[in-house]
Image (cartoon, rainbow, N blue to C red):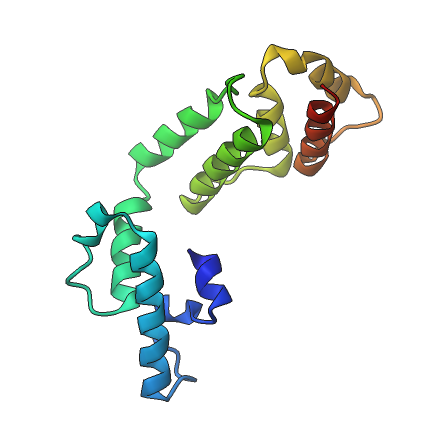
Length: 163
């Protein structure tokens, strides 16, 4: 959602009104644009929970409170999901990596720090047995003492294209 708001030059509206925006019409237009974008992105079931909100910031704060709760429960739930994550052979590698990146993102938003090399290791650990030769090749390479996530992604996608 932030990407859409940034594209529309109205990301500021989800925060407190900046002092530099003194034109009420400009601010109201920006606020309305954000509210419209948020409404369009939400499921009908969620819309009822924000219908009383008057500003984009109120809506944004309400949604953050609902969906980004920084509770211990959420953190543990996501950590367990991440550390037991395994690629099903019925989904594409791109889909698998997108799901993994979403988990990384969700944990990061809760203040959980994941080192880049840990991301790479978690990706390798989540692969099915079909990828064992690639995993062994990457992890046994004596020239590499650090696995970057991007390098692992490239190697996996190249392997997938070969198969």
